[in-house]
Structures are given as structure tokens and as C-alpha cells.
Length: 151
Image 1: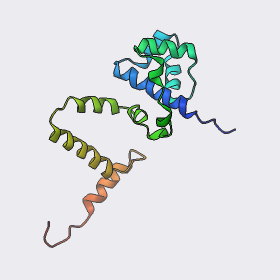
Image 2 (image 1 turned 135 degrees about the horizontal axis):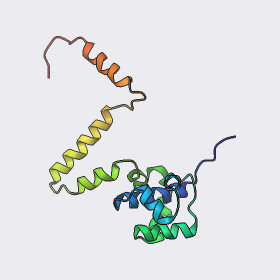
Image 3 (image 1 turned 90 degrees about the vertical axis):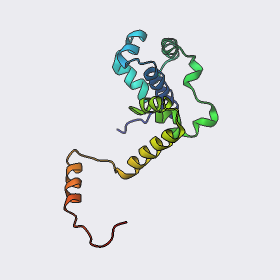
């Protein structure tokens, strides 16, 4: 039997719950305790695996200090799907990086940070196992150097 894929709207609402929760420095356990569910249920809500019922959605919004409407995108933004900025912010540590970035006021430093992150992301292919990185490092060390002028 094939697993049912989560509805994009449920995924988006879950991502926003995660964003607001982490922005308030609240753990999944904290939110779960305040709305009367296990933290695993909050995990499922945030991943969009389980739908959030209306009454529970109301409790979540109240605990997070937001309106229910803030958990929903406008209809023109919905077409962005997984490329939504809110979906990207739900990634682990993304909100931390953005919050720290916002404390930097110098535009040159901000550009340098953005360029650094982009260059690191472009250079580093995803590593699938813990043994892949050391092997790649060893291959680089064994490469013969070419003679001639260096630029």
C-alpha cells in the first residue's frame, strides 16, 4: 500500500506553526503541553503528516500569540509550494541564521555573509554517508600538483 502524501496546505500550515514556535523560543514539548497533545503529535502537525483540527488550530494560535489567519498564505502565494519562503524558514537552523543576520546592520557585512553562505552551498555536494567526506578529502590530498604559473 502506498503512503498518502500530505496535502500542501497542511504542510504549509505546519511549517508556519514551526516558524512561529521556534521564533518564540518554544520547544515542541512546550507547545504540546500547552495544547494537550504529545510532542510527537506536534511533530506530525509541523511536517503536515496530520491535519490540525479547527479547535486545536485555535489553541495553537492562542498559545503562539497569533491569529489563525497568520497560519495561512494568500491564494497567490500557495502556488509556490515547497519553494515558499515560509517553507524554507521551517528548515532546521534557518530561522537562527536569519535572526543573527538581521542583527548585522552593515550592508557590506550582510552581502559578505550572503556570498559566503551561497559559496559554501554551491561547493558542498550533499554528503550521503559519514565515510564519503574523509574519502573525498583523501583524494584531494593525493592529487598531483601541476607545474607552471599559478594565478
